[in-house]
Image (cartoon, rainbow, N blue to C red; front, side, top):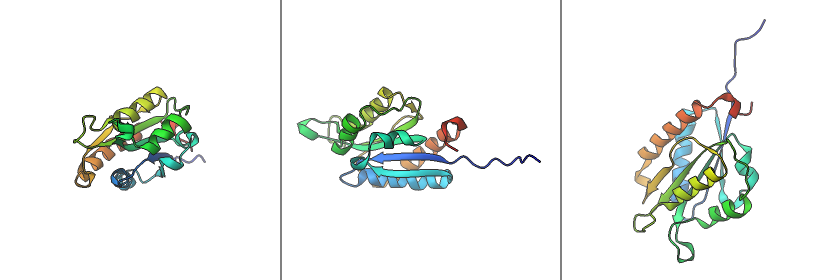
Length: 171
């Protein structure tokens, strides 16, 4: 007798982030907690950019990149240095074609290029031919009072993930 039971597909999200002040980590932790409630079958691998490789970006079903904007080398609007090195050196040739992906960029409104990290992360994903699931989450200034915004984006992200065909996921 054939069973009609279809076990849930375990989805894997690799969440790679860079932080120096703790702001990005707060956003990532808030997002992870919200997604854990909304998508309990989603397996989330949270990893810092400084220890990540090209393979880490490629291996999971879904990729999320997160970092703040920096003013490195007296140039405003750069990626946090660890994320910059990951995306331009270690994962410059990552194969992300068709991979569902999203980004989170943080910034400070005291600078002209307020949250340029959001733009740079999105450009990287587009150049690598990833499939963007939804617009990038942009957090301006202190994130600690923006939990509702992060949780609302988590719901949108979860909806986008839920609509993906099972072919995107390993069983």
